[in-house]
Length: 144
Image 1 (spheres, rainbow, N blue to C red):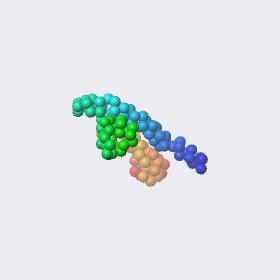
Image 2 (cartoon, rainbow, N blue to C red; image 1 turned 120 degrees about the vertical axis):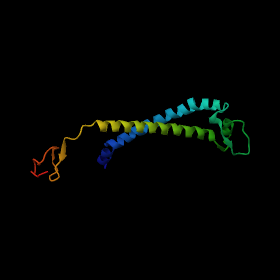
Image 3 (tube, rainbow, N blue to C red; image 1 turned 120 degrees about the horizontal axis):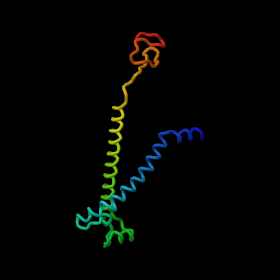
Image 4 (cartoon, rainbow, N blue to C red; image 1 turned 180 degrees about the vertical axis):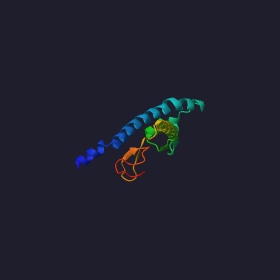
């Protein structure tokens, strides 16, 4: 069972997935910082000095002057400002992933276009690899 587990872990797909998850998590943190620290402050400024991280809807009967006060008191709140930031975060991450996938697809299509034409084919009778221009298979002597 340990050998099976080791073979599973060493397979290329599992290692590729692990690297992708680690890089994706780091990329997510970078994008979150970009949204919260760089994008949202100017957007809030354009909308009249709105701090999105402090936008909330108080669900308790007690009124609190700030979100920090409501949070410290443990009041139930709907934090729609944080939700707006998360939606913008998601849109940026998904847009970046779209651009990366699109670039990789273009590179693959260019690589496929640059590949030389095949010079061999398989014999339909013995499945041996033979030159493309062959009219008779050198292995099974079948007429092609």
